[in-house]
Image (cartoon, helix red, strand yellow):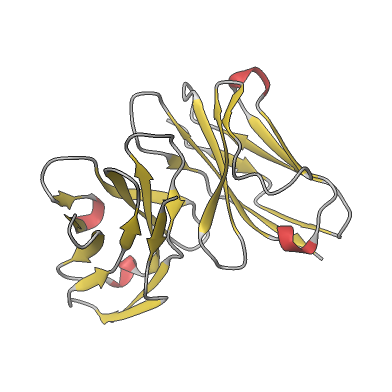
Length: 113
Length: 114
């Protein structure tokens, strides 16, 4: 069974540019989560999808961040325009409905210069 | 709001010695508690979880953790560390009663020296 995959693994962009991160969850997992770790600090929750619906987006930092999950499959997280403080590692996780355990992807390292 | 504290940024231990990584938490109500490990250039891997029942939880790679409700702690332990255990360890919590989002600690880097 394939795990959670994320693309790209690393992105370097200039301040003011746009970047789109992609996450493909484990097949059949209705729950999809985005987290990020900024500047070596704790990993912080961004949002939670159940299928295509946003269940909880309380962690989204501001309106420069837009997450979508078309058709309840893969998800994208767009940052527009990117700021220096957005640099960090963005993790995606998925889980089925019957377990508390979240399965994480390898993360996308975003560097904004 | 819930929070997790991992008081040690780094733990150094000699191979073969016991390893302990500390975690304390704050949450409303009963918690679900988790440990994840991140090896270099890899994603977070699930190690173990506490849901209910026995306070001593056994997980992957010989790790275990003890839930202590009175001390609000969930320390990760391994009786005999291996060099391959060198990695970044994260403790996480979420309340049983509400929501799925995990709250993580800041992580503890473990370095096991041969």
